[in-house]
Length: 396
Image (cartoon, rainbow, N blue to C red):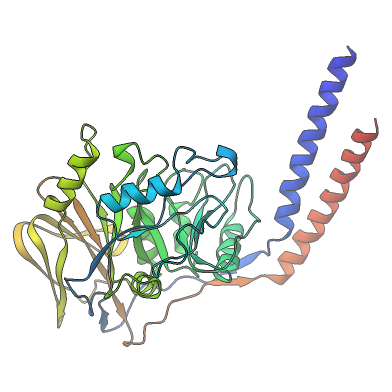
């Protein structure tokens, strides 16, 4: 009987402590109000590939994990050297390591080194890929996150990192909601292609509401010995040199392409290396001539799908060398998906409408100070009650 009482008291203490920590972390979040989003509009068509050089594609992956924290986190089978060796063999010129809540400084003297980590502890996988990070933000929310929490995290991360990327937004249903993309702002990149999920619904919701967010594609590799975990989804960056600042600038300017490379479960590393060398297509032209969009690639395009406002399919063309689409006056944005024989698909960043060539990205969030003060008062009362409960439980 005494053992049962000790067990129940210990369990109660653990529960109270956990609830206390959840409430305490919530206190640091202001309550935000959000302006209504404005879809893209204007007569100027912005092409992120205007300065593209078809000879300058750099095969890149920014999301992969190694063994850290004694093997507690997923990635325990990968060493830095293994990861670098496998990706280099597969033809990757940029190999990024994004360990959980820790910057990995392996090969930090390289000209293309970009400090990166994956932020987030919560059970709903609301993570951010921090590319070009100055330091690691330790605070996160363990359970449910409302829109204010998600926006506040992006705001705080943007002060500490070059790109706070929405990581695998469709990975968990209760994580980043598609409807969140209407209002979330103050970020430039979304991991539309991830080894576990493709998140075009989230991307189209953001674009349809006037958020100029460009894509990035990553394997999110946790085991480089698994052939299906590497060189499956990644990014081709158009930059003159494989140098950190040029890579970062190309990503934020949208001069990059997401790759969904055909997955095969029964091949060796050597076979995949050969297949990448032989079958990987690349973009040779994304040009606007007036209101006419021209797209070409190094291989015949088996099928190209033009997608616009609200994810609507605008046009489909098949078996062509150069696709042509006339941007209509009511097209607020146009993005393209190019499928090739063999199963590989390339995802392009959108052509967007603006008032002028000075592209301004909208910001919707504002701190609601009255609501914040009221909520903080409630939190303070709850914390006081929980603290007294923990103390009493401990004393008994």
